[in-house]
Amino acid sequence: MAAQKELSGAGLRGQVAGKTALSTVGKSGSGLTYRGYDVSELADKCIFEEVAYLLLYGNLPTRTELDGYQTKLKGLRGLPQSLKDVLERIPAAAHPMDVLRTGCSMLGNLETEMSFDEENDQADRMLAAFPSIINYWYRFSHDNVRIETETDDETIGGHFLHLLKGEKPNELHTKVMNVSLILYAEHEFNASTFTARVCASTLSDIHSCITGAIGSLRGPLHGGANEAAMDMIEGFSSADEAEKEMMAMLARKDKIMGFGHAIYSESDPRNVVIKGWAEKLAADVGDEVLYPVSVRCEEVMWREKKLFCNADFFHASAYHFMGIPTKLFTPIFVCSRLTGWAAHVFEQRANNRIIRPSAQYTGEDLRPVPEMSAR
Ligand SMILES: CC(=O)SCCNC(=O)CCNC(=O)[C@H](O)C(C)(C)COP(=O)(O)OP(=O)(O)OC[C@H]1O[C@@H](n2cnc3c(N)ncnc32)[C@H](O)[C@@H]1OP(=O)(O)O
Ligand SMILES: O=C([O-])CC(=O)C(=O)O
Image 1 (cartoon, helix red, strand yellow):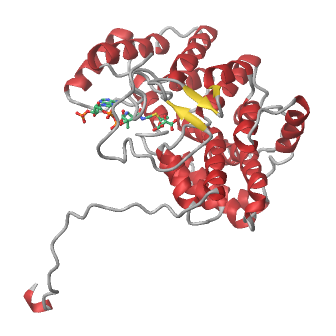
Image 2 (image 1 turned 45 degrees about the vertical axis):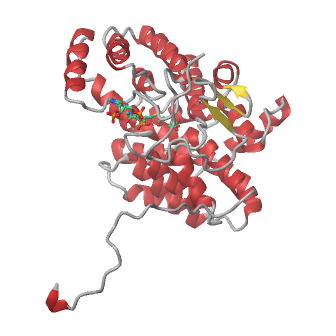
Image 3 (image 1 turned 180 degrees about the vertical axis):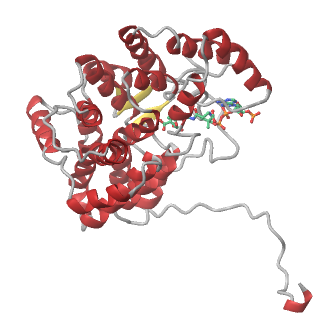
């Protein structure tokens, strides 16, 4: 069993900031559970919609509940014209995370949450609409087409790839998207979820909570690491070159994206799962560079620094092998984590006290305001 990481110091590390029944992260050093189920088992046996239902409604769905839930989500994929109008005005050079942030906020203007009784319906609407929002903008701004966002794909993962590529994905890609969305769905009090909970604690609306969380996830120290990892590994033309460059980066004390974790001490349980699928996808596309490069990076980081791949590192090659443009990597994370964020918003609302910590003051002692002429 992995040793528990010593959690103290800056960044609120190790401080208990609230209660949750949604997940455990590194409870015994490693491991990740959603409502008591191990994430690896969920990724093996479930589709993402089952996990979304688990997080948002509290239990794994029965067959009837799952059928009903998929039908409901399928019916919510369309976008209002005024949202499409806004998306069409966002330039192609914009970062897709900014597009999603704006898309979520605009949806909040058009379909405002009027009462907390609507929270489940609002979360389901966003779950169904986010893949449509990001792909509508991407295809319009990059391919000059106005896509139809209402597909009959059974899963959100399949729907996402269908919109992006204009054709139904194959079985392997659909499975990997489901696995990926399950792995990314929930992770206790990470930065973006905490953002959502802080916002929820003021009794704000759900679109404000999710818009804020998207902004927090965007950074390269959090969700943005999958894109940063891709930018790095695609610059290496062989495993040996990767090793040489990584050693130079470590000597320069560069931060290497996709490695390390605030809570886990010696492995991230999501890595072994997505790495396995990245290997299968590499074989599927006949890759002989990117996957071996990624494996070498993992070996070097462990050998030199005892730093391990987090969930983001092998997501980079996996997504790349499925033909997903790098800048859409973190938005896919949003389409998944939305479930965790929303479930935390519900939880915060159900037992709320406004989140308002204190600061240690390090500024000047009390002093008089000098006259303008004396400053
Ligand atoms: C889905 C996710 O959000 S997973 C996280 C995605 N983020 C990344 O991959 C970004 C790269 N990783 C990091 O920046 C960090 O490991 C974080 C942000 C994830 C965690 O930060 P912390 O909790 O502060 O890390 P931790 O306390 O373990 O750091 C210990 C030491 O290892 C170093 N370290 C940690 N990660 C890395 C890394 N990826 N590359 C180089 N050095 C690292 C730290 O700089 C620190 O050294 P120092 O004490 O000399 O400053
Ligand atoms: O827990 C964290 O700090 C970051 C993380 O892995 C996640 O949000 O999935």
